[in-house]
Image (cartoon, rainbow, N blue to C red; front, top):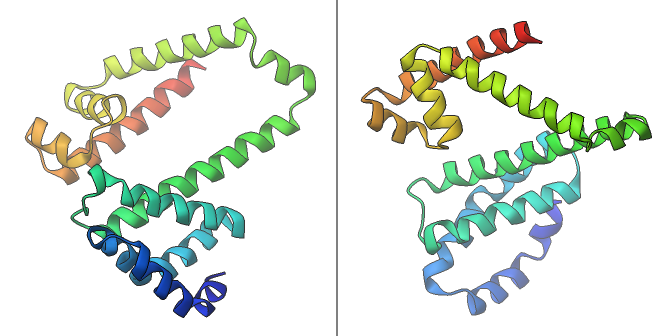
Length: 185
């Protein structure tokens, strides 16, 4: 796929220099610098040309719109993390679709039933109870990371711990929650 794009290189360079604002040329630099690595990674995850193209496009669109068009501090890390997250979402969606197609038709209708919604609420309540029973230092990290959707550096500043410690605390909390939730089932 990337080879096809490389053959049109001179055409692309001409079109790009005419249409891209000077303030956004760093995005093209990132595409040229990291594009081939990114496509390779996406092929390994997705194995589908259309999905790879979609994720590639979405990644650089998100980069272009990052904080009002400002360049992130670590462009390569931002690009690869964003692409990885989008690709994983696609893989998860595929798994759910496969499971949905494998379920009998009557089972799919039941998925939207009030009983299913009630089960989901019960599961949510059980998870909240388990989170509440965690030791305070683990509970704080889980709440800030998973419920507050904060980054590890933000969590480390708030709690006065290192970023690595925050990651370890979350990992321990997830392990404990997994054991407790499996016991409740």
